[in-house]
Amino acid sequence: DAGITQSPRHKVTETGTPVTLRCHQTENHRYMYWYRQDPGHGLRLIHYSYGVKDTDKGEVSDGYSVSRSKTEDFLLTLESATSSQTSVYFCAITPTGFTEAFFGQGTRLTVV
Amino acid sequence: AQTVTQSQPEMSVQEAETVTLSCTYDTSESDYYLFWYKQPPSRQMILVIRQEAYKQQNATENRFSVNFQKAAKSFSLKISDSQLGDAAMYFCAYRPRTGANSKLTFGKGITLSVRP
Image (cartoon, rainbow over all chains, first blue to last red; front, side, top):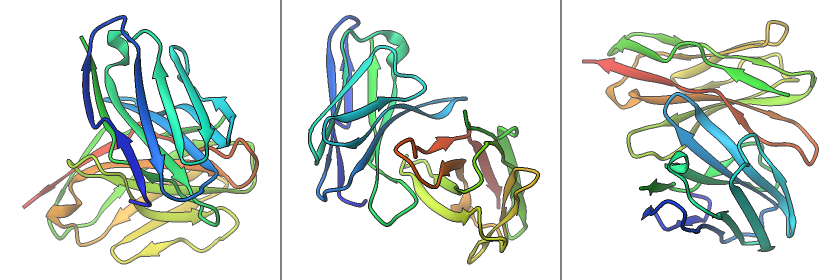
């Protein structure tokens, strides 16, 4: 699993509440990503990071923000959750010297 | 912008037979990587095979092989001697070789079922 831990693994929250998902890596890998997976859409990139405090938007970034204050943690925040953000969220990393991404276990988020 | 297209949402194969999953992509880059990932019901994302665009030889990993056609921007996955454990969702993915924008772009995926 390349030392990637996502927390929480499951969460149910109410519309309008803030939610933060955490991705933690045990190595000092530079590239980290947040994806969401929805039926019929595959995996879509929300935000990514290429270093501490270096982040950029992906294709579906509206309604999401991220922070990376230290190398090992990449946080995804839904400032005010909506039902359209019900999804499975994956964190991924690309270790130095590798070309592919390694994924965390995923977080199933339900917004009711 | 790079796009990855998997036009078949579902496919089925008889156990021990061969199946080919299709993928096309669009990019203006000349150097990049292509991947096939497998996602079983456990939700885990597993790398199946990787192809480097500058290599003309098609990648092979045991029962899995690709047909990489760079000019046609086509990258299909062939699974030989299909097994029940191959039943999963398969995603094609693209990544440019270098740059801070070296992010992974996925297709929508294809669900493969294997008939015993």
